[in-house]
Length: 186
Image (cartoon, rainbow, N blue to C red; front, side, top):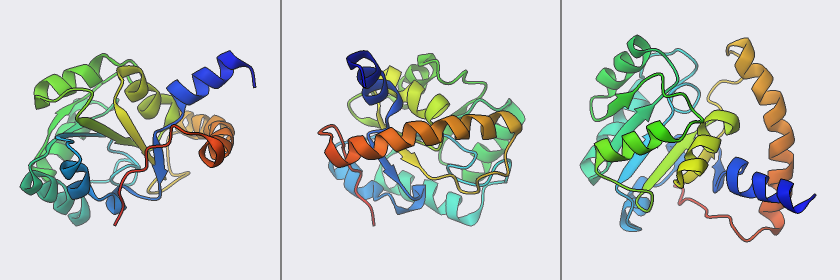
């Protein structure tokens, strides 16, 4: 790969880590490492696309709150979807129509939480919106496998096909690269 392509992939498109599920991340250990804010995507990161908050999501946000985290959901969805989810999990604020991958709303989220790029982590399931935007904002990123793949809007399915190519190169980088920052898992 050319130096420019390597730079783009490593610093903009590759997540700092890639795990099977949001629910295996050990947030208590991240708190011990100094993290104080978590920004989440909703659809296919926490619940299936357009699904309501379930008991597992509610328990996660309570755990984050009890640990001392500030939590935020950052979504490209319209307000009714994002507000309904946020209200159900209780312990978070939200930003809707975020325009990801534009990094501006990531900065707004950190401002609302009272955190910064050094003590905030982002968790999402899509490279071309979630990870790219968080990387551009300078936030540590953790990509998760989609909760329920292929039950999404057509434009998301098309992006997933391109993501397969990026994830192929990420797999090579992960085996040989030095920039992987594994998140603690349970």
